[in-house]
Image (cartoon, rainbow, N blue to C red; front, top):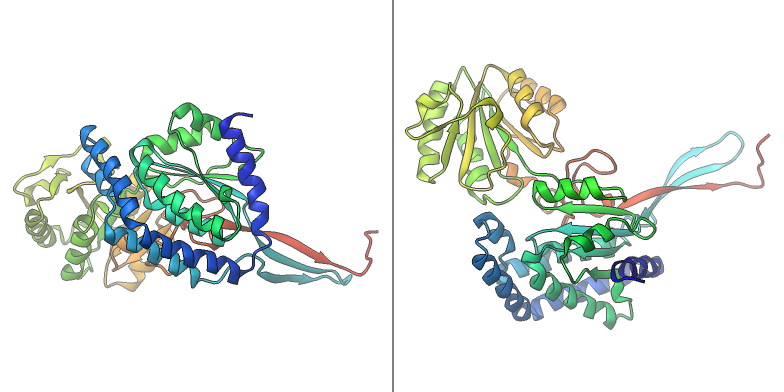
Length: 415
């Protein structure tokens, strides 16, 4: 049996052991995982430095290096994320009544784990801890296939978590790591439909398309974040500027950053000069449509096909639209079903936007940067799903489970 099939089969066997653990026992393991991350921070940072050195030698993009970087603060955030998961109710085993049938059958549904989850990701070592903890609490085994950029960091974090599993007499295969980032091995992984229940890719557009096109296993896509801020004619300018700057400049290399600013034509002459000055102070490069260019000192003209880019940098697209319907049409064409924001004081416009816009998260007068599991009360997230089957938006514990029917009777037979 080859390496990949062995990893997948052992993960499937290990997943069965989780059904024997209650919530208190799971939380005890997670408590030790959080503690172990803190205690082994120097070991993790040493491994991360190897990855950072390789990234700089390979001229990795600044946004990718930012995602790759670990420091004491980010390790503490990983540990805090696990502790947040501890405080969340375990969805596994929860029952709800569906119906009492006229013939006396009692029909319920029970939350159950998905089984074995395969995470494929790039320069995101924090995914190792987040996915390991979330999958463990939700009763799933996880196979982690990180990119070569984060290989040392991911293996170090996984080793810390696996040592905790051993301490609790649990199989280390509950959190497995593919030790070689070779793409041929990833293809083998994507063919293990007998053992793996779902694949969740997190990374760039190329990676996610590759996984989706080559997987024989169901895929939950966590696609790019082409997020828009629409400033309506009834917007408060101070609020709009706060949302713009926070969404664009607070952290550029993330999927919930604002990549395109849409402004209603009735206020463009007032708002865009304010936006231009604010963005200039943060050295944001402007790419504008023909109707917006007059308001910026330095601007690169955009053609229709140029919209829809995920810059992941201090760079933004700007477009003037005639009304909310045009803003929605633009988002429908160029958005990525991730997060969309409207700034308006008009409640009717806000509700219309919420109902009509095609996105997994819709913000009204709030920053796109809140589109995150921890900020929405889910604890650490496995990612933000941009496909609509099974899960849509930030995926927390419950999104890593499904439901099965429980039917109880007293000898009923069908006529």
